[in-house]
Amino acid sequence: MDALIWVLNGIFQFLRAIWMFSALVIYPIFLYYIALTIVGLRYNSTFRWPEIPKELPHVTVLIPARNEALVIKDTLLAMANLDYPKDKLEVLLLDDGSTDGTAEIAEEVAKEHSFIKVIRVKGGGKGKSYVLNYGLRLARGEVIAVYDADNRPEPKALKGLVAMLSDENPAVTGKVQTINWKENILTRFICMEYLYFQLAGQSGKSGLYKTAILPGTNFVIRKDLLEELGGWNENALAEDLELSFRIIAVGKRIAYNPLAVTWEQEPESWRVWFKQRTRWAAGNVYTVGEHLKRFREIPGWGLRFDLLLTLMIYYLLAIAVLLADAAFVGLFLTYGQVTWFTEAVLGFVYVSFLLEVFAGLYDGKVKSVGCWLLAPLMYYTYSQIWVLISLAGLWEGRKAKKVWYKTPRTAV
Image (cartoon, rainbow, N blue to C red; front, side, top):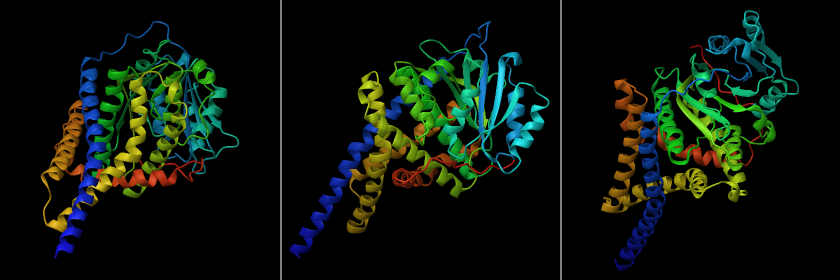
């Protein structure tokens, strides 16, 4: 009996140590994101539409595309509908070997709009970065804008981005909204995730550090800076995050305009979503790992801390949450109950998560009762799968190749 008690006590102490480790990782990260949420809410509430300069620069819009026949017409029509002087606008549809008629559809639209040009990329199939660099060499504009092939920017979006360009902020990004968010439960979860990410990760960091992070779409950057930086890194799996770090490393900032909105289509199946997010996780881990080698080039300890935290989210937070879940099950199976410490950790995480998601819904002015009712379930479903995605991303990063991993589209 004494031996059994000794074993059970050892198991309890081991599980308790796991919980202590998990708490030391989880608490600071969640507290940090609560702070970013509060700062983000203030940033958005005080943000005003920028004054549009009388003389607007010549802009080249790059749209990388591969087998986008279902969406490309609507995307190009959205470009034609931009409230931007057409004599100062150049749209390059960069077709990377599509086999579904993408280029032919684009050429039909281009016949009606002289500022739209269809470019057949040579030597492609090497990924989005290669295609963007190909387009950069052909671009005539002094400002480069990037939109994904499924995007439908609002008419005033491009002007709102360009208006915030300055010597200090040679790059500006806007907000991304989910166009098919009503399709099913998954798209609603994605919509909520995007709203919160942009509230904390874009608005919050803009308020705290005066800089945001470039997404893969809906942003502008001065061409001379982009050329000085050597364009997009064709070895990076997450070319947008990698470019963001290089901009910040040379002492520049990325401005964020939450009112410059583009609408994009998100995955409607769990399989497609899992594959997409695994690639993103692998790309983020690779990028942060590369820039940790040049840690001292990142200006300011705040941004250095955020860089480390980005790495922690994919390494430590995922592992901590996984261990915490395992320890919870172990304690319950061993003793039939959980300790107050376990309840405190689980309660803090859940309440923090829920408040952050609600803040995103509030800030995004989402009135759908369905989303607000789904939010309490999001942590125990969508977010738990995210933990697996983080671990899968770590593995994927070891063997990932730079080729097109295109998200399948549906007609919207």
